[in-house]
Amino acid sequence: MARLPRDARLLRPSDFKRVMSQGRRRKCGAFIAYEIEGATAGPRMGLAVSRKSMPRAVDRNRFKRLVRESFRHAELPPCDVVIVSLPGARALLGEGLSPELNAYWKRLAERWPRSSSP
Image: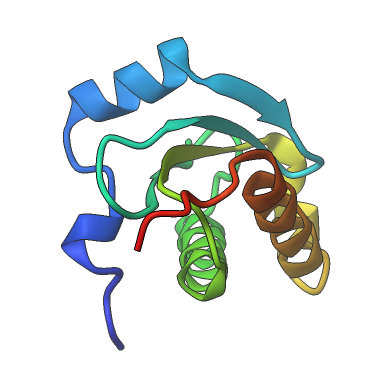
């Protein structure tokens, strides 16, 4: 299985803190998304999935896998996003999470238009 490229991930705790403290907070049904203008040329994403929100490791891993796959196929502007799972996310792991994620990525792309530079 191909991993999310290193330049598409938030890696350092300082990056997570910056996004979560200075970024805009958007609440969706299964997750909270923090977004801020990106410091790099492309979009980057980080995940925070707690044991409190999903007690079973298999559910946490599935949530992360679904979010990463959705992010990989989204057409996004340069921004940094942190996705934090909510306790209700476990109920949406079947068919409900993907449409919610796709709707969020679409709204994010509309709010943060791509720059016109090549």
